[in-house]
Image (cartoon, rainbow, N blue to C red):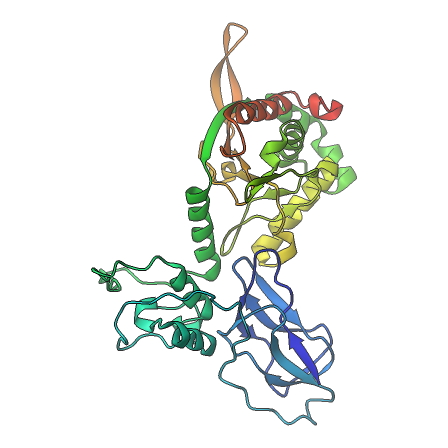
Length: 406
């Protein structure tokens, strides 16, 4: 018998939810065949069969919260015809870090129709005194309460003893409205963006770039570039190269705060924000400072395809040191990007628009783009932020600087 284990889920991901079993008990499986899908805060992960045989048992039913290393089920040697299907358990809950300091919870003991907790959640609720009524609807399948829901609830500030707050009832829906539970990814995006606003001293500085030189260079070489490298020459590679050059000059924008220390990085792992079917994700272009224009364009194209297909892997989303987001592809003329913690900087690109500009004492129509740098003022000074953005502007307006590394 071979156990099916939850794989390492990646940086800052401590648990996942069993989203869907792709095989039933008693069915034959091939080695490395996808068996079960796990939903994490970031992506959906497929767990493949560690060996060929028959799916003998399922230890974690759909909707169960699981931790890395937990047993999902088991595979027995043999064929489907020879295997005797084992009964599928209702649910199982592998261990997740225990709460060290539970607090008292105020609220009614029960509410008719409250969502049932999963086994791990029920155990933790019994230990801490939390109730389904106080927690409300869970994030598990069919609204069931997971252990993560209980941990999130316990982390909330306790209401004042004199005025305990009752759970707010959902408002009545009007005609034409419907309720849809937030996906785990969307809820995580919401939480992380709010954390960035609450934690970092976030400011944004703006500038504008004349895209004429970059557009002319791209128009001149795009056909021969595509013929040689098999990928189209876009503007993202120009901005990645420009940001890499600026980050080398202003390393604080590429650093992060860890406790009371600053961690500087001697590399650039560039996050590229792309839209996926479930929301915005930020795959990481690792060692972007060592890549050519063609390598950057190929990697970004692959990220876009994977995001659309929901095929991004956890390791592709981890470890970014700086991020670029391009709202211009959706028509945005100007915006204030939000930091992607623990990073200290994010560049926002926008729509290229013809505007009248004063050039040499004369008015000319030029293709202009607003760019924005949001930064953590705890680590990046205003002078550094403005100078960083000016360096990006200079590199895009004169791409020869990128070739000469000046």
